[in-house]
Image (cartoon, rainbow, N blue to C red; front, side, top):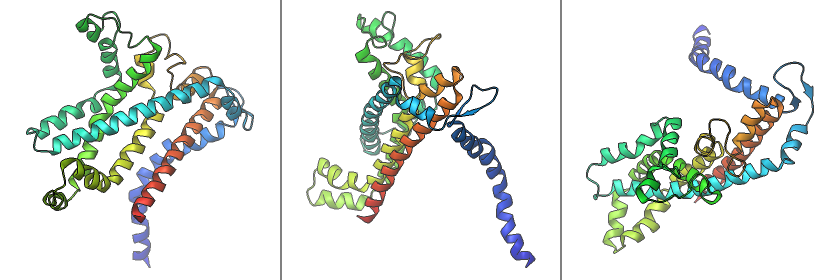
Length: 289
C-alpha cells in the first residue's frame, strides 16, 4: 500500500515546480485577465462590473476593425512569402546543388536569433527614404517607410526576413522524412523533378505544411515590434493605417483602460483559437486520408 502511494506521489513531486510556475505566471494571470475583461478598472481604486461593455466598445470602435484589417493583410503577405521561400530554400539546401549545407542553414537561421529591436532598427536605416542604404545605393528616394502603399510591405519584408530561417529548418526536417526509395522509384518511372515535387514530396509533407502555415498565422496575429518600431518613432507608435491589433492592448494599458485591454487580448485569443481549430480539422482530415 505504501509503495503504491509512493508511486502515485513521486510523479507529482517532479511536476510540482512546473505546475507552480504555470499556475502562478500563466493560468492565474490568464483567469484574472478574463475576469478583468468584464470590469472597468484604471489600475488603481475600485473595479466596476460592466459585463460585455468592453467587448461591445471594441467591436464598435473603428480602430479595432482597421487594426484587424492591417493584421489580416500582414497575415496574408507574411504567410505566403514565408511558406513559399522557406520551402524552396529547404529544397535547395536538401539538393546536391548546395555543398556547404551547414553554413547555409546557420546563415539563414541567424535572423531568428537576432534581437528583434536591434534588427528592426537596422532595417529602418536600410529602408530610410533620404539616407537609407537602398536609396543611397540606387540614387533614389523611394518612401519605403512613408508611403501608405509601401509601409505595410516593408513590415512584411522584415517579418519574413526574421521568420524564413526558422521555417526553413522545419521544412528541411520534413523533407528528411520523405523516403528516398519513393522518390527514386518515381524517377525510374520517368517522373520529372517538378512532377516528383508536386505529386510526391508536397503531399507527403502535408502535416509539415499545415504546422508551418498555422504557426505562421498565430505568430502574425501577435506581431507588435515590426510595425511599431519600423514605422513609428520614439514618441509614438505606428499610425492607425499600419497598426496591428496588438496595439489595442498596449494603447489601452497606457491609457489606464485595463478592462478594455484585457478584452482586446481575449479577442486576439479567440482569433488564434479559430485558426487552431481550422488546423485541427485539416490535420484530422489528413489522418483519415
